[in-house]
Length: 344
Image (cartoon, rainbow, N blue to C red; front, side, top):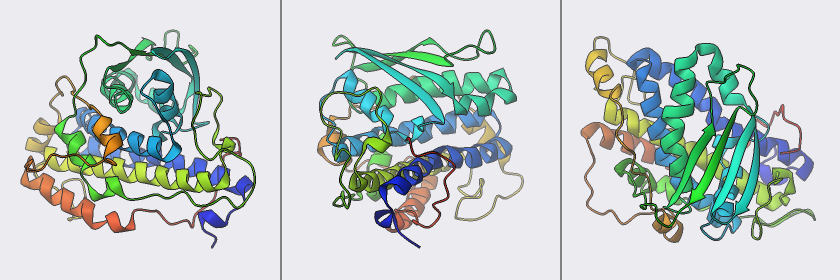
């Protein structure tokens, strides 16, 4: 079975798109289990931790890999174009950069919304309001701690066929108070997984960009990249998914009575343990203090938070489990079936 580096560029692009999609697929598998075992209200809280914990670290990693420089809105948008949360084709995202401090993006089509709308307005509000508000800012401040992402409009859609599905602004205001990292964000950044190296292999074919230096390109597609860079980006997408999974596991260990209650690697759920877990997980998060991310970019995702204690015995157990799988971070290159075209 060929590996990523063995594929010709025209076959590599759809494979990289599939790797980009895995984060959403894992979410679709995880969140129903959270709802069944801990209650529907728990879904938003765990999802916030999952993305808020991982996205500042993996955004900084991708910026280093791709040579994305600066701390302006264009740099933030470049990061969004290379984020597993904004899967190309599944998410039809358009961008407009007004100036270095102002920009906007909108989703002409949102695959995640299409998945959630049949489950009712409460789930739509959970995703598009409760989850997006803190996690969009968490991604933006990986580039600039004074950046904010705010909605112009978002679902629930009125009328029900409204397009674009949502519309957001990105603003950097020097008067904004810098957003600092949560303990959970720092903890994910300290995992060995966060600093796994990812070297760009040499190109075997001519054509394509080696990095994403220079001006922001609103029409950027994965197909614009060279074959060696595509291989590195595919591995970085795998890293993003591993960080999201690890972030979710640490969050669940914090919030549940027993780290096994959701069928984590330690074992299967035990009956009669759900009441306390539901009360704990169902609590609403307070204002999110996300991440001043200059240190992430300069230190390769490692933070100098020595001596910070684990928040609980459960979190320590989960962290141990996460570390045990770090040596096998890159997913197998085996399953290359793709339903996406090569556009990226």
